Length: 483
Image (cartoon, rainbow, N blue to C red; front, side, top):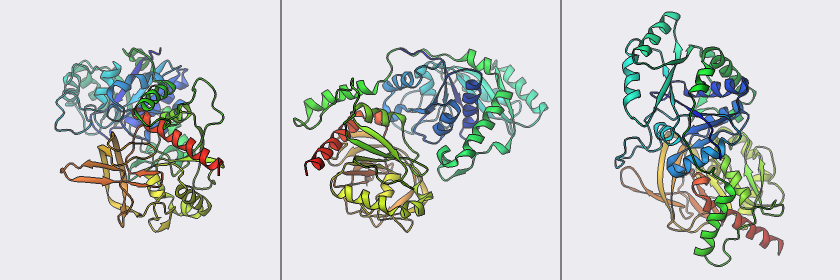
């Protein structure tokens, strides 16, 4: 059982510099000898990439909305195994979360405050000091007293303009008894390039991302009290860590008792699986949005997993199931279109009934075209970059059976895209939900054994879907072998 102390990096609002501070803190603590477990609150896929570079281990997400509040601590325990310190970067402002008019609790669901409370970890507030003076004391007083379940352990002043400015701000913090754990000067050269959905993913940014992480680490190491942060870190979590093999066993027993005989075969996960179905998972610069737990669950369910890059690779030989996660295919459409051999192979295997799980970028890859560039043509629609961002949690229901879901099953997912489908697909929709205006929404596409949608789901919150998918891939591999 793990009991790794943690510190939560939060802010009064978005844009305060949480990612710079959290990433730099992870790197600086690692540099002085700590084994740091990096986490991000919410569904964000981009920040964990920078965290992972700084920590030398995968960045993971803690999202009570997508996985359920009851899984946050086990997933934290899982991600913090073998570490002596955890850094958890928050989302938006400290108390910001899912907007739900029916939520009556004191803390918004999915907020940094909720996760800090679940972990029993102290919060360090990153304040963008531009424009602040003595009134900072009132702001800190409000954040420190708003919710008694959240402990504000200190503040890091960011973008401080001068030595005199620093002195005034420190005096304001002293007035309300909030320790100053760091004071970072304004450094515009640390800005990491961004685009319509936020920072450019670390995988795409390449050596520039490594350089940016190194610069963040240097900045924090020079201006933040690392010993003070380490001494502040706490966690009151208790109980076992999440285990993908256990998740598969539990859900396997449930599925075997509730579905048609033989529909789901659960492997012996105590043995090394060398003959399970091969699942090809798209990666590389165009497909960067994924959760570390996804691959872990696929392996636990008996699959062999191979990551490939659709920009340049062929479909791995023997592929029996295909995972196309989210990312930025609109930034790489010409290169994706140029790999005609892969597009043809994906289309052919999909028509033959190979299970395909496609989310967001994967959905776009399967359309006829993306911004005029030919794609796989599995889905009867075209896609284009749109005029506005679509963002938010969705309470969805599966509208028909698929290799992942059964009709009527409910899931909470997250949309995050600025593309749209045109020439509405004639394929059956995958999901249904009600929009904020109450209107019915039908989204995604089901065709052959393909489940494609804009909706991102977290596999740890829905292990039955991954278990079914591997079973469907095994069935496809068996049928192909018998031809």
